[in-house]
Image (tube, rainbow, N blue to C red; front, side):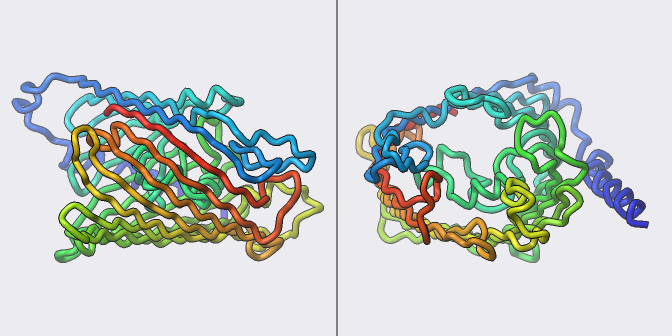
Length: 384
């Protein structure tokens, strides 16, 4: 009976993704199509380079790894991202997206470099489908590319939930769109992914991870949006889950001065940590290993628009994250104050300077779980 339930559940999910193909939204006017030439190509690129200087003796500036012999590299230049992307529009609503990060070749490039690689068909504003390698919608950060983040990089919880298959680049399929709930605009996404990261030859097992997101546009003027995210799945025949809530709001303080805010919290089973431990060093219950975190990110933006300088920004993200709060809890608190200059439209050019202060509940020698203070200067250039 359990086998039959799993079989029919997978078929139902498959039919959900196929259903739009039979909808009336795929019919188009032949004359309108003939007026536009396809394919159309759009190339995008991003460069992010950094200078990192650590203030904690023996801690690597790039990795955060502590060396008890004091031999960590505390000052270094680093290329964080060198992305090149291509979007090919094959017809109205149908495109293929490819994105690669060539900065990944500086370390072991296995399962790296290729980030986005998916086909997408948007039938109308209510429904679209996507399949391939992409970032499933599961919070605010998953919806924003790295080049428009209001801080230096993604949060610690984004990284860990990515390791667990809920965020970052995953292989699978998604249905997304929007509708009105009365007068309230609502966007949605439902994703089914392998859950073992990008550029994998196959899933690690027969289990899949299913996640969904509902976002409510409460106030368009002030960009007040509330998101609810949830996911269930199976990893090595064990049930896993994840949940998240997020909120954005913008407040115009003066003619050219705006305060942009983000708040997000997540919790879920850390099966990535559980299965990385030796069997004899972990409990027999995967539910004992849960991660939990939240961050608040205010960003003060002054749109100066003086010659080539577009805006000046000041932000300070506070994040609390514990990758195993039930067993061996070692919560990490991170403060990231930052000042930035924007040149051109949409962060075409960007210079950022700031600090990252990491404080752990307890320090663990020769690991990345060690207090660290880091100074960062980052330069960004992009075209789109």
